[in-house]
Amino acid sequence: MRKPQEQSIFIVRGGKIVWRYTMPIKTASGLNQEFDDATLLPNDNIVFSHMRGAAMVSPDKKILWHYDAPPDTEVHSIQYLGKDRVLIMRNGHPAEAMIIDTATGNIVKEILIPTIDHEGGCHGQFRHIRMIKAGTILVPYLMENKVVEYSLDGKVLWSVPAKSPWQAIRLGSGDTLIAGDSNRYAREVNPKGETVWEFSQQDAPGYKLGNFQTADRLANGNTVITFWVAGDNDTSHWPGTVQVMEVTPGKKIVWALSSWKNPDLGPASSIQLLDQPGNFLDQER
Image (tube, rainbow, N blue to C red; front, side, top):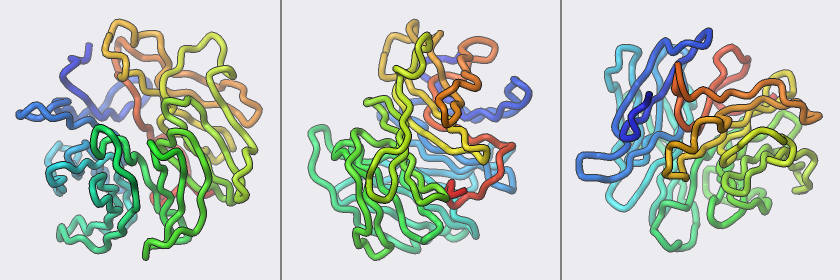
C-alpha cells in the first residue's frame, strides 16, 4: 500500500505499474509539495509540477531540469509546448504564466495574470492552464469562478463564468471543456458560454466520485475524467471511490477505475492516455 506521506507518478501498462517516480508529499521543512500536472514526452522524459516548483525527470529517475518557486508562490500547472519549452502557472502576487526554456533554464515569456487576494494566500488562485493552437492561453480561476482566455500580451479575449474550474481545454469544435473540481462537474460550453454538455455525480449513480479535477476529450468523442479524494484526510474512506472514468457523449459509463490495492494508484489528479492520438500543445480535435 502507498504510504500516506508519499506520492507517486505512475506509468501503467496492462494493468501493471511499469514505472514509478515517488517523492514525499512534504518538504524537509514541512511544506506541501503535492504533485498536480504530469506529462510523458516523446523522448520518455516526464515533466511535472509539484507545488514548490516544476521539474523534468528521465526514465532512470534523474532530474534533468527544475524550476524552484520563490517563497510565497506555488506551481500547480505545467504544459509541454515542444522545442524544450514548457508553460507553467506561478500562483502568487503577482501571478504569472511563464514560458521557460528547459534546455537553458531561461524564462522566455512572462504574462501577468490579474487576480484578487484570497484568504489563505495564493493557494486557491489557479491549477491547470493550457496554451491552445491559436497561441493564446486558457486560465481557469479556481476561486474566482471563471475561465479567461488571454493573449500572450495579457489581453482578455474571452471569458465564461464557471464554478471552481480546475482545468479548461479548447476543443476542435471551438467549444471549451471545463472540469469543476469541488463543484463536481465536467462541462462543455460553446463560444457564447452556453452549456452544451455536462456530466456530474447524478449521472453516475452507484459510483462514488470525488472532486472533478481534469476532463479530457478523446478522439472518439468520449470524455475521460479524473477524481481526487484526498481532501478527506481519513484514508480509510478512499478505497471504493473512482479515480478515473470514461463516459460517452450520451453519458454512458464505458469504464471506471478504482484501484486501491494491487496496485494502489492513490488519489488521481491528472491522467495521460498513452495510446491516444493528439499533440502536446492542447486537446483540440
